[in-house]
Image: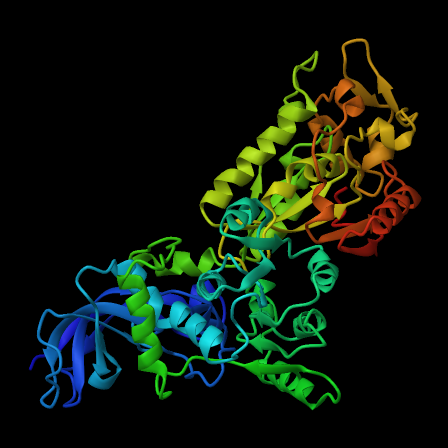
Length: 554
């Protein structure tokens, strides 16, 4: 038997997507108990990300070839392998080495794939759906008719599979998901919650608590999941991941899952409670593995389940899958009179760290006199920008400065996603000395219907700061301050009096970090603090910090 030249994916070292490459290599003939398979599809999941970061439990050391599962056709049998004939469709949970053109794998791990099954859906059964089956049928015996089940990241790959299997068992299903998916989940009979505002904790307690909670986030998040378990009947919190470390982006410091798992299991030592915990992980050597896999394959073959596929990448483009997972872009919403050029230092700093930043001149900053654009034009423009990124699966962090806070508050709420979601959307917001409106507020309305004295309406419909250098650029060198002043564009008076038109402000549903600029003269620090106090009273998910100067820019 011959050696073949193949292309395969390699993680050269632990770290970011730059460590992912596709290389040319040689594959030897299969060993006597192996089968060589021509791979058609390999699955891609959070396990691939964690292996790249070096945080997956008990993983190989880099360099390594990822690929947790695959489907393909038998190419060559080893001398003692005869269960599958050449050309037969097969698949396996390989754990490694499936992101390649050919793979050698022990025959005992292969399962036949029926010809009538969609192969893209079939590849998902080996990891995501087999994991879900074990979570529902092995990790607990509490999933059944009338039992309340709560699933975090219910619109993710495993979460969706758990939901489907629980509904087949007649359970009442609740869970966290992107708000824009809530209606479709309700149509399936699910009660969805927005992850960010944590209203799900109090709401589930009002429902009486959950009999089962499935938590892939781990670490400190287990505490909230534990709190929503029903206390007067047997209930269980099942952990099946530690994704909190990758939810913060690839630059986050990796965290070992073992400590979180230990703390989770330690809750079983609590006395006088009917609550319990367990941690579930998939293992192809477990006695029930093939039985569970066949059960899932039968559900797929019989049309009882349908596996949604997010996207398919060619092998040569696999790095893109890593780059579009988790935090991968920043959207900058600029202030009034200001265009992206004013933010060149911030843009350069982010890009120097490999962060893609999206910035555009907004309609009201088109420098037309008299002004011909409205606040709604800006809001619609931002929504269109985000919609395109959502369609591409991008996770966005939005940075809004000054007037940009009005636009962000009005435009973003419909796009919220939890960081663990595989769907695109806005995961968090950073406000820099930005306005914090409530529903139907205008900027002038935040100040009792009057604009600050330093802003003077003109007869041509524009609004002009009396001394831009003093107001905006007092902390810059004179030459740079004059450049910034000369780069300013016209801005209309009417937009400052126009209320934002939204049903819910973004800061109610999306985690918000507010940077208080203590030397800001356009929006004094005590006014920033006053707005923060107002929204904190309304229950936003909020973090604040202070700075004297922010990149000497604002």
